[in-house]
Image (cartoon, rainbow, N blue to C red; front, top):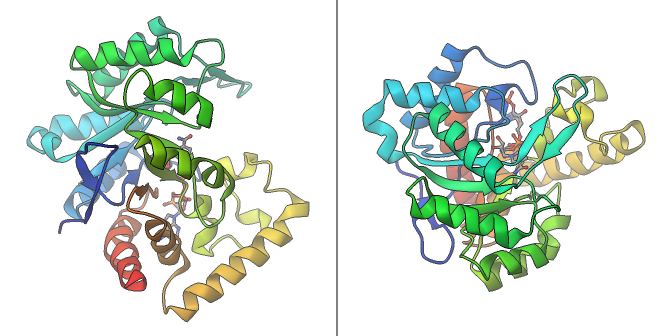
Length: 303
Ligand SMILES: NC(=O)c1ccc[n+]([C@@H]2O[C@H](COP(=O)([O-])OP(=O)(O)OC[C@H]3O[C@@H](n4cnc5c(N)ncnc54)[C@H](OP(=O)(O)O)[C@@H]3O)[C@@H](O)[C@H]2O)c1
């Protein structure tokens, strides 16, 4: 089963129109699966044609799990378009976040990701967060060196400003910019989509089903788990308004005879050929749904 493709950046390559986010498999929103269950999930993602995988060095053991999957399935490495990210680290006791784009840090992070992923090259390497202490030109120069050494193939940024994107592309093309984008979270895209288009950068839409809210399955604050408990907008005061929006969204889905998550993806795909949503799940069942039901239904909604 092959998914429709979309171009990454100005000059390709062609990759799946919907990616597979692997943050959930590290337990971002609920208790993580065990290693074997996650390997089975990756088997399922592969089987159903979810061949664009998005991970990061801070998604707990996601990189190691993907690495183990490649070690078990070396012949399948060529089929997977593999994206990972560097720059963020956490103090696991205080949850304080650190950002580094220091060239030495980037080189070490890349070497560590290559080792954990058990691959020779990363297809798309993202700066997960911009470090204000390091000029973006220096960061890009280091990434271009890694590209020239064959360690990465394409360069991406995440949560950068329009000004940073402009300075970055003056050094080297940026294939993709990852921003939170869904019918639930509109503001970064409102400012950035036109800049992406002007600069030939693909918009990779993270949290495309609103961190699970647009599935309609979050009904009370008690349903919030993991990261959703830490997101500041999910507070008592906002929650009633959030649920009202979700209910309205569910009505739209009903009018199409679809699930809200399907409409969430359909809506994003309809915003332009240069947008690639990367929904995440830790469930093999949902993984198949993402492809069979969500995408194809989404395509049906669009026509
Ligand atoms: N660049 C960045 O800073 C950044 C930030 C956040 C995320 N990301 C990337 O974007 C990917 C997706 O974002 P996300 O995981 O935050 O949010 P998301 O895809 O909008 O939502 C994920 C949540 O929705 C649930 N879910 C997924 N499909 C479902 C379905 N059909 N029915 C019911 N529930 C469903 C998942 O549950 P289960 O987990 O229980 O399956 C999970 O709790 C991540 O995996 C990661 O790769 C990047």
